[in-house]
Structures are given as structure tokens and as C-alpha cells.
Amino acid sequence: MMEELKERIQSYKTEIDAFEPGETNASELFRIKYLGTKGIVKGLMGEMKNVPAENKKGLGQLLNDFKIFAENKYDQLKGSSINNAEVTAHTSIDFTLPGDALPLGSRHPISIVKNKIISIFQRLGFAVAEGPEIEDDWHNFTALNMPQHHPARDMHDTFYVSHPDSGGAEWMLRTHTSSVQVREMEKGKLPIRIICPGRVYRNETISARAHCFFHQVEGLYIAENVSFADLKQTLYFFVQEMFDEAVKIRFRPSYFPFTEPSAEMDINCQICGGTGCNVCKYTGWVEILGCGMAHPNLLENCGIDSNKYSGFAFGMGIERITMLKYQIKDLRLFSENDLRFLKQFTSAM
Ligand code: DAH
Image (cartoon, rainbow, N blue to C red):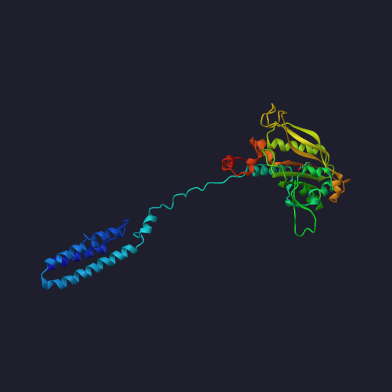
């Protein structure tokens, strides 16, 4: 019996030695088979009671060694990477699979239209210029031929800001991007051919048609012999590129202190096609910008010789163009950050 037991133990040892941790959960399977309550070690221990007393000690020693042998193997299996529970989880991941796609954001419609405006004018040789949103009185009003108490100032409901270093001078949130024209002309490098996109502020009651902040693009071309015909053709090219080639334009005389003559330009309503709707107030036409020939006072204020140079300027609201382009009827949608609105522009332009 002793001999038979010894042989069995020896063959178990050989089996254990050859045990490969190839399978998932191999350590647990090993534990159940050899060290579990119904396992081989326990089974052999149970056979001790049939062993004659004089052999008990020797066999006990042998079984103990075998138990330690099996436990060592178990520890080794547990530590080996494949059987480690944590790693087991990893082995079920296929690292070659592509990851989950992150939801992609989209450009804001105002940015889409702003970029489109920039690219159209860049094709005509206009460069982009920018200026500060907090302006002084000179750049926002006075240099633009609107001295103190000029009635045209009342058309802009200005937000004034106090500035600790201003020494009493008035600062404001710019009410239009025309201030950037002044800054560019003051640099004294001619000719000038720029567009100035940016955010402007006015203290207006928020409604479907007005907001306390909005966006404009200003245009300025100063050189020798610039004429009103150049202005017209430039703006006609712009609307054809922005809307479609069949777009119609018309100019109405207007007044701006910094241009003379001044005009407002309308296009035929892109929403009803000219038959009449509430956007064009049943006229078939929608105003999209103000423009004119740079006033000599403006040129002189900025140090430019008005006898030698002439030029044109224009200013348009990006919100207005965007509303016409995408048939949006409420200006407030642009600043509410409602994803249902913003997601509609994912594939635009
Ligand atoms: N600055 C004007 C406004 O905000 C828009 C404008 C009109 C700009 C005529 C111009 C211009 O450059 O020539 O109402």
C-alpha cells in the first residue's frame, strides 16, 4: 500500500510539473483539482486512516511535502500573468479593434458664415485686420467724423466702461467694427485693402431681431482713384458668391457720418424669392449692409491726404447674412447654445 501510494504521489507530481498555465482561469482549476475540499491532496490525506500505524509518520511526511509542492505550484500559477484575474479580463480585449468614436462638435453658424465672408474677400485681395473690443472715444466715434454731441452717436446705445488707468477718459465696448478702419489707417501704410470681422456691443433690448452683442464685418479699400463703381462691383461679387449668381442688388441713398455719399445695399429676399414674406416685410428686398465713399474728414483725421487718396468702406452684420443664408428667424438662437439648433450645421460649408 505504501509503495502504491508513493507511486501515485510521484505521478501526480509529474502531472503538476507539466501543468501549463495556458488556459484562462488555470490557477482556479488547479486549486479545485489539487487543493480543494474534494481535491487530490485532501483525498490522499483521507487515505491515511487505512495506513498501518508504523508507516503513518513516513507517509504523513510524504503527503505534507506533496501538499507544499502543490501549493507552490498554485502560487506560481496565481502570479503568472495569464491567470491573474485582472489580466484575464484584459486578454478578452482585442487591442487591434478601432476605438469608440468621440462625438465631433461642429462650427457655430456665425463662424461658418464669417469664414466664408473672409474667404470671398481674400480672393479679391483683402487682408484680415482685427482690433480691440474695448475702445476709446476717438477710435469708436470722434475719428469717424462723430465728434462729441454728434446726433449719430445716439443711434448706438453704447456700453461705457470705467478703466482705472483712463485718467477720466471715456472707454466703451465698441459699437461697430468701423473702429478697426481707423486703427488701420492710422498706421499710415497705403494702399489699404482690409476686412475686419469682430464682435460688437450695443445696449439693446434682446428680441428676435436685436441683441446686446452681435458680429460685423467691416471692409475698407483706400488707394488712388477708387470709385463708387469699384464699391458696387466688389459688393455684387460678394453677394453672388455668398448666395447665388442670380441674386439681385439695389442701392438706396443713406447717411453715415464717415462716408459721403452713403448707401445701404439690399438683396432680393432669399427666403420668399421676392414674392413677399414677413422677413422682407412683403417688399421683396432685405437690407444687408451699409457702405459709402470714405469721408475726407475721416481720411484727414487718420493722417491720409484726402486730395490724393479716396476709398470705400462697408459694414455688414454677420447675424443678418446667416439668417438669410439658413432661413433662421430668431437672432436669439445664436447665443442660446441649444444643441438641437447647433447640430444642424455639422455638415455645412
Ligand atoms: N458702422 C456702421 C454700423 O454699425 C456700418 C457701416 C456703414 C460701416 C457704412 C461702414 C460704412 O464702413 O461705410 O451701423
